[in-house]
Image 1: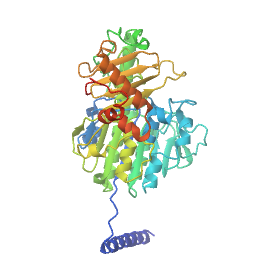
Image 2: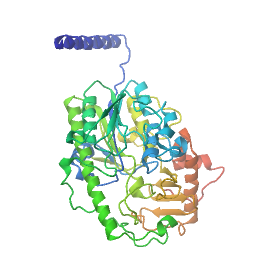
Image 3: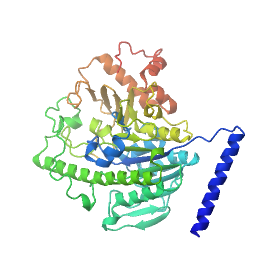
Image 4: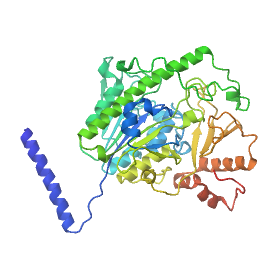
Length: 490
C-alpha cells in the first residue's frame, strides 16, 4: 500500500508538470505563486520586551520586520477580533463588547458569511483556526458548530482561559482534555499547527493561543521562570499627578503595597505564560523548515489588545485609550521582508485581513476598511495614513471600564473624546508616558482639527475610511465645507 500511494503521488506530480509545460508551450501565463500565511494572535500581550522570548526574538523579530506603531481598533478581545476577521472598525461591525447582547460570538455570528476565513478559502487556500475564536463561542449554536470558511477547526467550547480541563471542538467533534502535562492548551494547539503546516499548501493558519490572558496559566516546565521579577516601573506607574485627567481617572487612589505585590505577581505569570507561545513559535518554525516551506511562508505575530500594569494608578487590565492598551507588538517574517527591519508607519488591526488577501490573491469585499500592509512589507514608499481610530463602548456588566470614548492616534498626538464631554490630549513627542493631559491648554486650532478628523473617521465606512485616515485626501474632500486652516501636519 505505501508503494502504491507513492507511485500515485509521483504520477500526479508528473501530470501536473506535463500540464504546466503544455500551457507554457501554448503561451499561457503561469499560475501566480501564492505563499503560505500564518497568523499567531496572542491575547492581551502588551509591547513588552520581546527579547525575553528567544524563539520569538531570534526566529521572528531578527528575521523579519517589526511595526513600531501598530494599534488595535478596540482594546478589548471580542471587538478587536471582530475587526480582524472583517477589516472593519467597531462602529461598522457593531460588536461592542465581549458579551451578548452588545457583543460576543452571538453578535458577530450573522456576519460569518464573509470573513478572512471565507476570503482565503474561496481563493483556494486550505484554512484552519486553532485556539480562541470569539468570546461566548459557541453560545446559541451546537458545540460542534464550525463557522463558514474554515477547513480545519480546533477551538475551546468550555470556559475560556482554561489551560487544563477544557473541551475542544475539533472539526465538529468535541474532545475533553484533562490535567496531564501533555494537555496544556498551548502545547495541544502547537501540535495541531505543526501537523497542519506539514500538509499541502497554500495554507492560511490562524493560530490563537490564550496566553498571556489572566489567569495566565503556564506549563509546569516554566514554573521557575521570571521568579521575583517586578513589573516594569514605567514613568506613569502609580502616577503622581492626576489632576488634569477625566473624572474616571482623577479620583483613583495611589497603588497600595498590596496592589503593587499583585501587579508583580501578575507580571511574572504573564511572562511565564508567554514562554508557552515562545515554544509554539520555535516548534512551528522547525516544522515549516522540515517540510521545506519556511522560505515560502509569512508568519505574523501580534495581539488583540494590550495590557496595563500599574500605569496611571490602574490595576491590571485593559480597555483604556492609553498606549499600554491600544498599541501592541506586530512582527512579520516572510519572503522579501528585510531581516531585522522596523516599519514606523501607523498600522491597525483592520489592516491584517486585507494584507492576507493581497498576499494570497483573494478578493476583498467593499465593506473592508483597512489597508493592505504589503507595500510596507516590501519596503516601498507609498501614500499612507497618518491617523488610526480606536473606539470603545462602555458595557454595563463591566463597571470598572472607562466611559465610552473615541480616540485618534497620529504619529505625534493621542486625542480622546469621552461621552461625558471630557477630553484627553497628549503630545507624545514631549510626553511619551502620557503624564500631562493638555486638552484644555493646547492650541484650539490643533484640538479642533483633531476633533474634526476623529468625527470623520468615526463615521466612515468601507473605502471612505482610507480617505478619512489620510490628511491630504481628507483635506481635499473637506475643503469646501470645513477647511482646517492653520492646522499643523501631524
